[in-house]
Amino acid sequence: RAIPPTAFEVIYSDTGYELPSSLELYEDVKRYYGERFPSLKFSTARNHESVLNYWDKIGTPSDTHRWCCSVMKTAPLYRMLKVDGNKQARVLAFEGVRSEESVRRSGYERIGKGVKHTFVINARPIFNWNTTEIFIYLLLHNLPINQAYRFGKPRIGCIFCPFGSPWDDMIVNRCYHDDLKPFLGRIEQIVSERKIPNADEYIKERRWKLRASGTNVGNKTEVKLMLTPTEFIAVVINPQKRIIEWLPALGKVSGSIKEDIGSG
Image: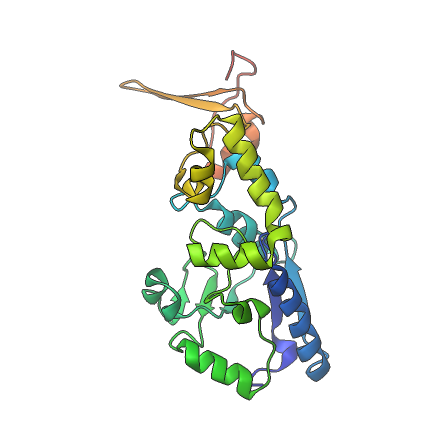
């Protein structure tokens, strides 16, 4: 109501972890605001691969290795924010983060500058609102509400998350069991392949979320580092790509390439 609908765009990040009710809500929101503001643009950001493919490459997400947020949400979103070919646009992003949601988020600022990228300013208009105020506002204006709140979830996140509580897991398992099956099935497969003892307890107590490394994923690439008084040597064993393709990701580099001098 405050900003002309032609002055901004709504982007929904579909991580591949979305609850069915969240996808339904997005469609409800598009209909609701599309009827009132036909010129408002909606877009969806997605990774080009499924999240389970990344489980095979990186390993299951854990509470110390939370790669899913950056890989499945942040990166696809920021790829959409490029203009004139590959130029990164400077962006003011409005988001619904609130301080009450977690201890970590309570330490955020209402206006975040360069939180994840220097070209993005994150504005959080409802940062100081409590849960009661949120639902009063939604009900007062008859706005669409995520059905998962009515099922008992205090906070809507991913369908399968290392930060989820036993209560969240119970709600998801009861209300979205069929959608949860692919993830639980992959956990069971991992447990079987690695011959993890006490498998039922491992799954029930969600010990998979404690795993911090990429050990045992299908990728057999390995990097061995060697230091001498005058040299830093990195040997890549079973590389998936030529070093010249990914080395520029570290920054500006110079040197010479010797092809196939061994395993690296």
